[in-house]
Length: 484
Ligand code: NDP
Image 1: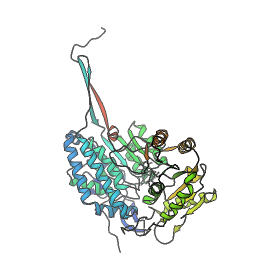
Image 2 (image 1 turned 90 degrees about the vertical axis):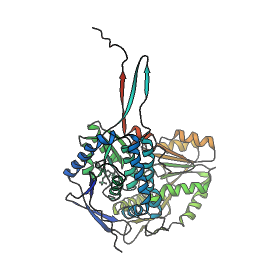
Image 3 (image 1 turned 135 degrees about the vertical axis):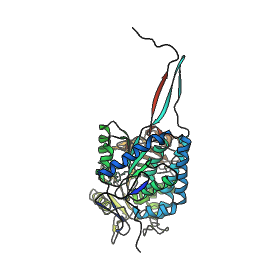
Image 4 (image 1 turned 90 degrees about the horizontal axis):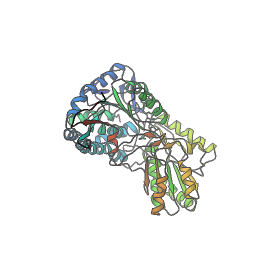
């Protein structure tokens, strides 16, 4: 069956689809390797055109009341929900993630962001500060043109998590999806126009790193929000700093999931499965270092092995399938390299480890036990379906080991001891933590990383701080004094 997902055109600028650019960008269905669409990479003129459109649209957009901007965002959320199946099917073809997942976690999460920030838009404001007879007040103002750059694992979710708070605050945006998954951001642009957003408020240009780099250094850009790896984050942060631009950096991780002897084993196994194998392990906040206290190690591994029999790997368009391919050939090769290193460095392979032969980019869910802190698979982000299980004895020891990483995106703890749960999360050096669950990221709560995993926060009220700035207005009620 031929899959038809060719968009109207490659880019979306100033309220309309625009074709342009010279180099071809083939879009591949990861389950089969079939090319399902061919787009064009933007050239410099298109990037400049998109930024000019965003710049021109920004003052009038910011001049609308919060209620008016919010109404458009909430209407977009409704349209996105109405089209959830179509958008989910597109996301499944673009990313290879099972439809079972995309139906609930991608456009649905994007719609939540549009709804949430649409609601907040009307509440944004500053404060009044009394200074004796004088007083001051603050105005919360938009930054201007924001650039969003996305990773390939949650394309429409990432685009929406960036666009919704940016637009709510009165900014406009130029978004560059990952070149691996360019399709769904165009749909977000379409939907925003249909919901009533003025032309130029949200624009999409396709491209690889070079297009991203041009966006980031453009003199008319006030803010850059990137979701990507630490090496890219370093480059983008440095380039943005040149112009003292605001940044949000959502980067990689190697997060710990700590399971104490007294935990509910069934729930802990569920969390380890979700935190390592959902989206074939291609999630930044995954708990890829699973620390299991020695008393329940065998029970944990036995139950995990039983639960892995429930893996249904197959065509991700089949709603019964719960484990899809990886996004690309390159990503499979990276994971194969890490599995080989795990074996060479003495980790014990207890499940998976093999690439599935044939068309597409398939890797089995893989579990290593007896992993130690200095093994490569325990130190580096793999971004694939590879779980490392490490043993520990004491609380003090596991906290030190959990924090002994350059990353600090997320962390989780499983225990039935209430005091210990709070004591442990308080000591985690990570931006997003969970007690007795893992990887839940509702829009109402801030999400982001510490240390090398990022700067700033997405979601929650916290995101508003990163897409607006305060202007102070001092109001004198009396005469102005001067020394001479
Ligand atoms: P990359 O860092 O390779 O790319 C991220 C984005 O940046 C892509 O759109 C990429 O373009 C673009 N880019 C690359 N170089 C530059 C540059 N010099 N200037 C501007 N933009 C550039 O990440 P992946 O797409 O491979 O995604 C996986 C990574 O993302 C993992 O490390 C993962 O942990 C992280 N991630 C973090 C999340 C978070 O919220 N913290 C969520 C999801 C993923 P292109 O790819 O088209 O070349």
